[in-house]
Length: 112
Length: 111
Image 1 (cartoon, chains in turn brown, purple):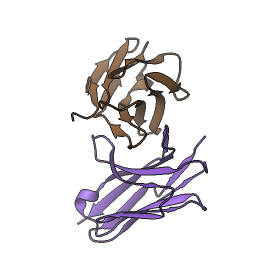
Image 2 (cartoon, rainbow over the protein chains, first blue to last red; image 1 turned 180 degrees about the vertical axis):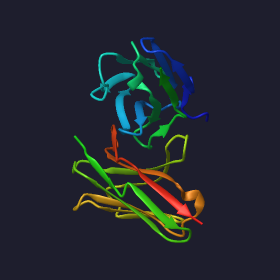
Image 3 (cartoon, rainbow over the protein chains, first blue to last red; image 1 turned 60 degrees about the vertical axis):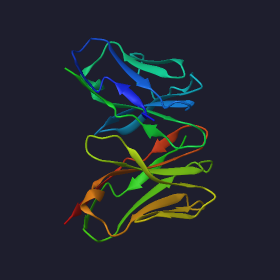
Image 4 (cartoon, rainbow over the protein chains, first blue to last red; image 1 turned 90 degrees about the vertical axis):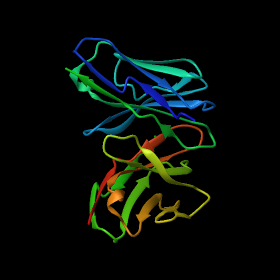
């Protein structure tokens, strides 16, 4: 099992640019979570999906952030336009009801 | 919603000593309490978890205790080793959806 896969692993972009982060959950997992981690705010849940349907997006900071899950094996988190304060590590995680969450390796985003 | 508080924020112990991290939660509906270890630059990884129908669980040098009445749970690491140095996160939630994570505890084990 390859585990949760995220791409890119690192992203450096300029303020105002669009950023798209990608996630492939573990096969068979029906929950997918997007987190953001910073020193100041710790590990924050942004949004989560169950069976490809967004269940709770209350953690999405503002309209510049959007997330989609077009099928069971792929999800994207998009930031448009990006700002320096969006710099963080973004983790994707997946699980089933019977198991705990497994995190992906994360995407380190730096917005200049 | 759920609110999880974690203490201490930093913990320095000598190799061989024990380390204890404590968390409290607010939502009495929470029934699943995982602990994650995150090494520098890496992803959080599950080290142990406990469900609300169990009061204590042990896995080698790691143990977790849960007091549902008081809404608190703790992680105990015995015979600490330098490789135990990391940030540890507690979390609380239900088995049907999301967890709320604590703020993390930086554990430093000095030889």
